[in-house]
Figure 1 (cartoon, rainbow, N blue to C red):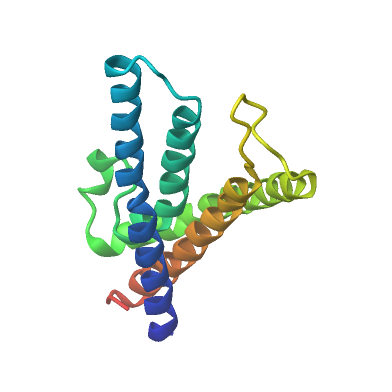
Figure 2 (tube, helix red, strand yellow):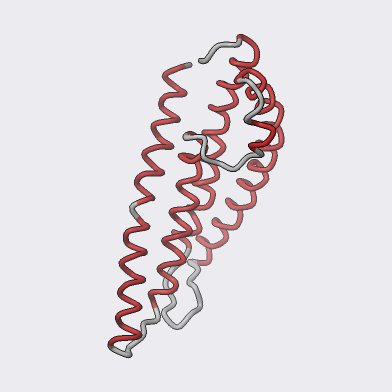
Length: 166
């Protein structure tokens, strides 16, 4: 079980770090657009959409790493006052809502992305890039987040029951 959980953690970390590099590309695009627009008076059509795509991919594919690293938002006023076993009990109970939400989100994003693939969808803008590969990142990111959530649930359940870290 520990090997499987370690594999899920490693997958989340690798995906998050890899997609995090997109932010450097996004920053480069923004600098390029600022220089093109305000210095050379020649704005581009493609930079705005590229920035949105890059930020979206980074966000979606980095969510599992954020969960693995315990970086998601929670109500610290309550959560920080609990000991580790009670936190694990609270997290185990709330996992039901987490899994339900992500299960519906996974179903919806898969349907959404598959429809986009079948249409070979483009953005419809003046630049008009294909967007179905980017839409495919949605169900992949949600699946990774759900997988990391299941790993966290297994650890939390073990701590809630046994009182020790798995």
